[in-house]
Amino acid sequence: MRALYPGSFDPVTLGHLDLIQRASGLFDEVIVAVLRNPNKQPSFSLEQRLEQLTCATRHLPQVRVASFEGLTVHFALQVQARVILRGLRALSDFEFELQLAHTNASLSAEVDTLFMATAVHHSFLSSSVVKEVARFGGDVQHMVPAAVAEDLHRLFNRAVG
Image 1: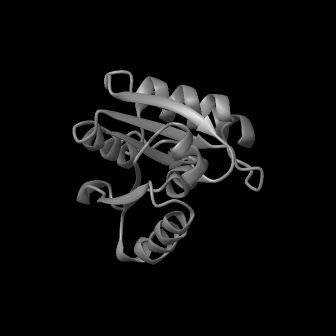
Image 2: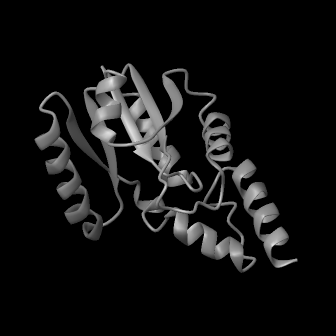
């Protein structure tokens, strides 16, 4: 069975990677899909985020990285994914994620949503928190893959300097 793990991944964190790795053990294929959202101004370009994810998941043969626009459930149907994966860090995530799951179910009965709890030691991580720490010169090496930490350092040194 094929699963879709959608997100902005701006940038990918170790929490994301934990979920991807665990999901790759549950599904025949996991498509990690970066949403191209015209309403957001990401810190990293779509191409950079795709490269960051490709590099970080290279060791997982069941994982494929892609990008998409539009409704997640439509992309899931296009790539024949039967499951949309969503990570939950805290109870506060659940209400929003449940609303998305119900919306997707109303659009297609062919695709289910599976919630996966983030590992406890990554539950504080979000891309926003990582960028905030990096922006002010904090160490993010325990939050993101090494290549992403370097990208963040370059991004914010250029922005500050």
